[in-house]
Amino acid sequence: ETGVTQTPRHLVMGMTNKKSLKCEQHLGHNAMYWYKQSAKKPLELMFVYNFKEQTENNSVPSRFSPECPNSSHLFLHLHTLQPEDSALYLCASSQGLAATTDTQYFGPGTRLTVL
Amino acid sequence: DQQVKQNSPSLSVQEGRISILNCDYTNSMFDYFLWYKKYPAEGPTFLISISSIKDKNEDGRFTVFLNKSAKHLSLHIVPSQPGDSAVYFCAASYYGGATNKLIFGTGTLLAVQP
Image (cartoon, rainbow over all chains, first blue to last red; front, side, top):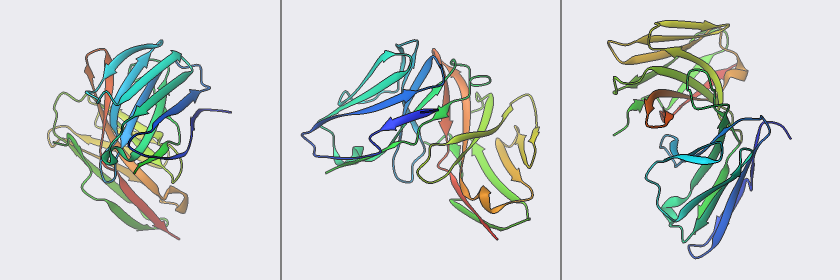
Protein backbone atom coordinates (compact mmCIF):
# COMPACT_ATOMS: atom_id res chain seq x y z
CA GLU A 1 0.00 0.00 0.00
CA THR A 2 1.18 3.48 -0.74
CA GLY A 3 0.08 6.93 0.31
CA VAL A 4 -2.88 7.31 2.63
CA THR A 5 -5.46 4.54 2.86
CA GLN A 6 -8.87 4.62 4.51
CA THR A 7 -11.24 1.82 5.46
CA PRO A 8 -14.05 1.25 4.99
CA ARG A 9 -14.73 3.21 1.82
CA HIS A 10 -18.47 3.17 2.46
CA LEU A 11 -20.35 2.80 5.74
CA VAL A 12 -24.04 2.80 6.55
CA MET A 13 -24.98 2.89 10.22
CA GLY A 14 -27.97 3.45 12.43
CA MET A 15 -28.08 6.21 15.01
CA THR A 16 -27.55 3.74 17.86
CA ASN A 17 -24.59 1.93 16.28
CA LYS A 18 -20.94 2.25 17.17
CA LYS A 19 -18.45 2.10 14.34
CA SER A 20 -14.88 3.17 13.63
CA LEU A 21 -13.14 4.67 10.63
CA LYS A 22 -9.51 3.75 10.05
CA CYS A 23 -6.76 5.71 8.34
CA GLU A 24 -3.21 4.54 7.67
CA GLN A 25 -0.41 6.52 6.09
CA HIS A 26 2.62 4.89 4.49
CA LEU A 27 4.57 8.13 3.96
CA GLY A 28 6.52 8.36 7.21
CA HIS A 29 4.67 11.51 8.19
CA ASN A 30 4.26 12.82 11.72
CA ALA A 31 0.97 14.71 11.47
CA MET A 32 -2.47 13.31 10.69
CA TYR A 33 -5.83 15.00 10.18
CA TRP A 34 -9.53 14.24 10.02
CA TYR A 35 -11.73 16.34 7.74
CA LYS A 36 -15.47 16.25 7.09
CA GLN A 37 -17.08 17.19 3.79
CA SER A 38 -20.86 17.50 3.81
CA ALA A 39 -22.84 17.95 0.61
CA LYS A 40 -22.27 21.36 -0.99
CA LYS A 41 -20.07 22.45 1.92
CA PRO A 42 -16.31 22.92 2.10
CA LEU A 43 -13.96 20.47 3.74
CA GLU A 44 -13.97 21.18 7.46
CA LEU A 45 -11.02 20.35 9.66
CA MET A 46 -12.06 18.20 12.63
CA PHE A 47 -8.91 17.03 14.41
CA VAL A 48 -5.15 17.26 14.07
CA TYR A 49 -2.55 14.99 15.62
CA ASN A 50 1.19 15.57 15.62
CA PHE A 51 3.51 12.85 16.91
CA LYS A 52 0.41 11.07 18.31
CA GLU A 53 -0.65 14.10 20.35
CA GLN A 54 -3.87 15.97 19.55
CA THR A 55 -3.07 19.57 18.63
CA GLU A 56 -6.44 20.63 17.30
CA ASN A 57 -10.09 19.86 18.05
CA ASN A 58 -12.24 22.11 15.92
CA SER A 59 -15.22 22.12 18.30
CA VAL A 60 -16.25 18.65 17.19
CA PRO A 61 -19.16 16.99 19.08
CA SER A 62 -18.14 14.27 21.50
CA ARG A 63 -19.99 11.61 19.49
CA PHE A 64 -16.84 11.72 17.31
CA SER A 65 -13.88 10.34 19.22
CA PRO A 66 -10.45 10.27 17.54
CA GLU A 67 -7.60 7.97 18.44
CA CYS A 68 -4.01 8.09 17.26
CA PRO A 69 -2.03 5.10 18.62
CA ASN A 70 1.04 5.94 16.52
CA SER A 71 2.10 8.33 13.78
CA SER A 72 0.95 5.94 11.05
CA HIS A 73 -2.58 5.19 12.22
CA LEU A 74 -5.58 7.36 12.97
CA PHE A 75 -9.05 6.24 13.96
CA LEU A 76 -12.36 8.01 14.25
CA HIS A 77 -14.77 6.28 16.61
CA LEU A 78 -18.41 7.03 15.98
CA HIS A 79 -21.34 6.57 18.35
CA THR A 80 -24.93 7.79 18.51
CA LEU A 81 -24.54 9.79 15.31
CA GLN A 82 -27.25 11.90 13.74
CA PRO A 83 -28.43 11.83 10.12
CA GLU A 84 -26.78 15.23 9.57
CA ASP A 85 -23.43 13.56 10.28
CA SER A 86 -23.73 11.80 6.93
CA ALA A 87 -20.77 13.04 4.92
CA LEU A 88 -17.45 12.15 3.32
CA TYR A 89 -14.77 11.79 6.00
CA LEU A 90 -11.26 12.40 4.72
CA CYS A 91 -8.01 11.60 6.43
CA ALA A 92 -4.79 13.41 5.57
CA SER A 93 -1.18 13.35 6.66
CA SER A 94 1.80 15.67 6.40
CA GLN A 95 5.42 15.64 7.46
CA GLY A 96 4.88 18.48 9.91
CA LEU A 97 2.46 21.29 10.61
CA ALA A 98 3.84 24.08 8.42
CA ALA A 99 1.45 24.75 5.55
CA THR A 100 4.17 26.31 3.42
CA THR A 101 6.43 23.27 3.45
CA ASP A 102 4.37 20.34 4.69
CA THR A 103 1.88 19.41 2.00
CA GLN A 104 -1.15 17.50 3.19
CA TYR A 105 -1.74 14.18 1.44
CA PHE A 106 -5.31 12.92 1.49
CA GLY A 107 -6.83 9.49 1.54
CA PRO A 108 -9.81 8.58 -0.68
CA GLY A 109 -12.32 9.10 2.13
CA THR A 110 -15.07 7.11 3.80
CA ARG A 111 -18.59 7.85 2.62
CA LEU A 112 -20.73 7.65 5.76
CA THR A 113 -24.51 7.43 5.76
CA VAL A 114 -26.39 7.63 9.05
CA LEU A 115 -29.95 6.30 8.93
CA ASP B 1 -19.61 32.49 7.35
CA GLN B 2 -17.36 31.05 4.65
CA GLN B 3 -13.91 32.60 4.65
CA VAL B 4 -12.94 31.05 1.32
CA LYS B 5 -15.46 31.19 -1.50
CA GLN B 6 -15.57 29.58 -4.90
CA ASN B 7 -18.65 31.09 -6.45
CA SER B 8 -18.67 29.01 -9.62
CA PRO B 9 -19.75 25.45 -8.83
CA SER B 10 -18.88 24.33 -12.35
CA LEU B 11 -16.98 25.36 -15.47
CA SER B 12 -16.89 23.85 -18.94
CA VAL B 13 -13.98 24.53 -21.31
CA GLN B 14 -12.91 23.23 -24.69
CA GLU B 15 -9.71 21.22 -24.91
CA GLY B 16 -6.75 23.43 -25.74
CA ARG B 17 -8.36 26.59 -24.35
CA ILE B 18 -7.62 28.32 -21.07
CA SER B 19 -9.45 27.37 -17.87
CA ILE B 20 -9.72 30.06 -15.21
CA LEU B 21 -10.92 29.09 -11.77
CA ASN B 22 -11.59 31.81 -9.24
CA CYS B 23 -11.47 32.03 -5.48
CA ASP B 24 -12.22 34.87 -3.05
CA TYR B 25 -11.32 35.11 0.61
CA THR B 26 -12.33 37.37 3.44
CA ASN B 27 -9.68 36.90 6.12
CA SER B 28 -6.71 39.23 5.66
CA MET B 29 -4.70 37.04 8.05
CA PHE B 30 -4.35 34.32 5.41
CA ASP B 31 -0.74 34.09 4.32
CA TYR B 32 -0.58 31.05 2.09
CA PHE B 33 -2.92 29.77 -0.59
CA LEU B 34 -3.19 26.38 -2.24
CA TRP B 35 -5.12 24.63 -4.98
CA TYR B 36 -6.06 20.98 -4.71
CA LYS B 37 -7.53 18.78 -7.44
CA LYS B 38 -9.92 15.91 -6.76
CA TYR B 39 -10.96 13.09 -9.06
CA PRO B 40 -14.06 11.00 -8.22
CA ALA B 41 -13.46 8.32 -5.58
CA GLU B 42 -10.02 9.76 -4.80
CA GLY B 43 -8.78 12.17 -2.18
CA PRO B 44 -7.74 15.73 -3.04
CA THR B 45 -4.18 16.06 -4.34
CA PHE B 46 -2.03 19.16 -4.03
CA LEU B 47 -1.61 21.07 -7.26
CA ILE B 48 0.06 24.45 -6.72
CA SER B 49 0.45 27.09 -4.03
CA ILE B 50 1.39 30.73 -3.55
CA SER B 51 2.66 32.76 -0.64
CA SER B 52 1.03 36.07 0.21
CA ILE B 53 4.32 37.86 -0.57
CA LYS B 54 4.04 36.89 -4.23
CA ASP B 55 1.46 37.67 -6.89
CA LYS B 56 2.15 34.83 -9.29
CA ASN B 57 3.41 31.27 -9.22
CA GLU B 58 3.77 29.08 -12.27
CA ASP B 59 4.22 25.33 -12.61
CA GLY B 60 4.01 24.00 -16.14
CA ARG B 61 0.48 24.49 -17.46
CA PHE B 62 -0.74 25.78 -14.11
CA THR B 63 -0.40 29.36 -12.88
CA VAL B 64 -1.87 30.85 -9.74
CA PHE B 65 -2.39 34.60 -9.44
CA LEU B 66 -2.94 36.40 -6.17
CA ASN B 67 -4.50 39.86 -5.84
CA LYS B 68 -4.20 40.72 -2.16
CA SER B 69 -5.96 44.05 -2.38
CA ALA B 70 -9.00 42.35 -3.90
CA LYS B 71 -8.61 39.24 -1.72
CA HIS B 72 -8.84 37.18 -4.87
CA LEU B 73 -6.87 34.38 -6.40
CA SER B 74 -7.24 32.48 -9.62
CA LEU B 75 -5.89 29.31 -11.17
CA HIS B 76 -5.13 29.34 -14.87
CA ILE B 77 -4.72 26.09 -16.78
CA VAL B 78 -3.41 26.43 -20.30
CA PRO B 79 -3.81 24.54 -22.49
CA SER B 80 -6.64 22.61 -20.84
CA GLN B 81 -6.68 18.85 -21.35
CA PRO B 82 -9.48 16.31 -20.82
CA GLY B 83 -7.48 14.78 -17.96
CA ASP B 84 -7.80 18.10 -16.12
CA SER B 85 -11.51 17.39 -15.62
CA ALA B 86 -11.90 17.27 -11.83
CA VAL B 87 -13.09 19.28 -8.85
CA TYR B 88 -10.67 22.05 -7.92
CA PHE B 89 -10.52 23.29 -4.33
CA CYS B 90 -9.02 26.54 -3.25
CA ALA B 91 -7.58 26.60 0.27
CA ALA B 92 -6.07 29.25 2.49
CA SER B 93 -3.84 28.99 5.49
CA TYR B 94 -3.02 31.04 8.54
CA TYR B 95 -1.21 30.21 11.69
CA GLY B 96 -3.77 29.51 14.36
CA GLY B 97 -2.83 28.01 17.69
CA ALA B 98 -0.50 25.02 17.38
CA THR B 99 -1.53 24.16 13.86
CA ASN B 100 -1.37 25.71 10.44
CA LYS B 101 -4.99 25.24 9.42
CA LEU B 102 -6.27 24.93 5.88
CA ILE B 103 -9.62 26.59 5.15
CA PHE B 104 -11.19 25.21 2.00
CA GLY B 105 -13.67 26.52 -0.52
CA THR B 106 -16.57 24.43 -1.79
CA GLY B 107 -14.85 23.52 -5.04
CA THR B 108 -15.39 24.09 -8.75
CA LEU B 109 -16.09 21.18 -11.08
CA LEU B 110 -14.08 21.65 -14.27
CA ALA B 111 -15.14 19.75 -17.37
CA VAL B 112 -12.75 19.89 -20.31
CA GLN B 113 -14.53 18.90 -23.50
CA PRO B 114 -12.48 17.06 -26.18
